[in-house]
Every structure is written in C-alpha cells, then in structure tokens.
Length: 64
Image (cartoon, rainbow, N blue to C red; front, side, top):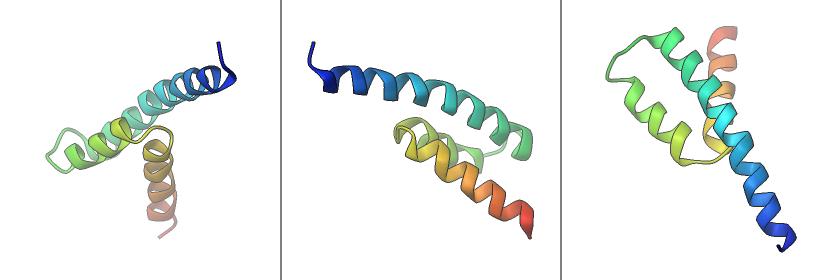
C-alpha cells in the first residue's frame, strides 16, 4: 500500500479517539441542549481540526 494510505488511516484513528473525548467534554460542559448540535457536527465532520477547535474554544472560555 502507498504511504499516504497509512497516513490517512492513522489520522482517522486519532480523529476517532479525539472526537469521542471531545464530545464527552462537550456534553459534560453544556449538557444535552440544542446548542450542542453545531459543535457535534464540527467535531465529527472535520477530522482532527474539529475536536481541536472545540478544545481551544473551551480553554479560552475557561480562562475568562
């Protein structure tokens, strides 16, 4: 198999665990409300960038 296939597989595996962790934190922070839906879509549909964007948003929000 070409090396880029291994890179894609590795990125998707990292995204899977990162997304589960991020959605757990999201539900813990906000509970089950309609405001969670856009964040869920961002976390699940943008590999690696989606979960990282919520984690950065969460860290900035907690500092205030």
